[in-house]
Image (cartoon, rainbow, N blue to C red):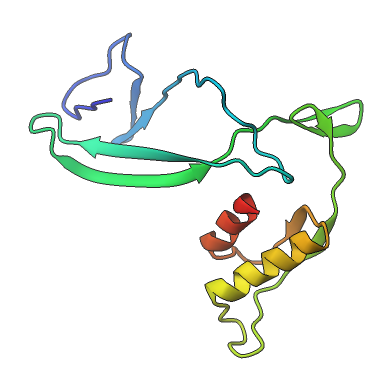
Amino acid sequence: LIIRSNEEPSDESPTVIVNRATLIHMETKLDQVKAWSHETPNLYTLVVELLDSKTMERLEITSTRIGFKCVEVKDRQLLLNGQPVYIYGVNRHDHSPTGGKCVTREEMRKDVELMKQYNFNAVRTSHYPNDPYFYELCNEY
C-alpha cells in the first residue's frame, strides 16, 4: 500500500486523512490461521513498511507479533474461540529482589513462566503500565 500525502483519498482508496494523520483500513483473508489461546499461544509476525511514493525508498519499517482470537460473552459465559474459559488470575507488581522496581527481562520471563506453571491465565498489572516486553511475554506464554 502506498500513501501519497499530497493526494486526496478517492472512493477506492482505503486511506482517510484526519488532522494531518493518515489512517489506513486494510482487510485481507488469511487461510489456515491457527487461533491464539492461553493454552496454545499461536503468534504471527506482522510487518508494516512505509515507502516514499516517488522513490519507493523505505522510510520506516516496524513489526509486531499478533494472535488471532475471538472473545465474546454469551449467556453470561466468557468464551474464547467459542470455548468456555475460566479466569485464574494473579496480581503482579514490578519487583526485583536485587533491583527493587527495576526488573530485568529475565526476571519478567521467570515471573510469566512461574504463573503458567501454576496454571494462571490472567494477570492484573497493578497501578501503572508495565514494560511492553511483559505484555509480549504474556502473549507468548
